[in-house]
Image (cartoon, rainbow, N blue to C red):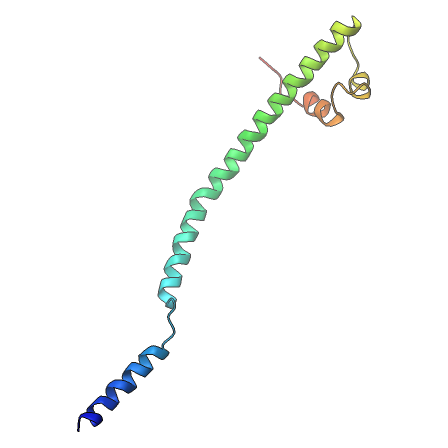
Length: 106
């Protein structure tokens, strides 16, 4: 008689062991929702920071070009042209282009 009672329990234990562990659809949707909210919060901030970094980088390049112009003046006792600065490797063409496109200083 005890063997008959134990059979359903063994069958239940066997089935319980066959169950695959994993996340439910609801849990996955909640995680997706949380990740989406975090992305919505951080992406605009990152885009704004990139603009700030670009502005600071361009300001640094302007300072470098101004310093190189001053160095050219000291070495040659005259004002340089844009071609001279680039040809003599005082600045790169990209740096000089950024320098030309700088906003007017106060």
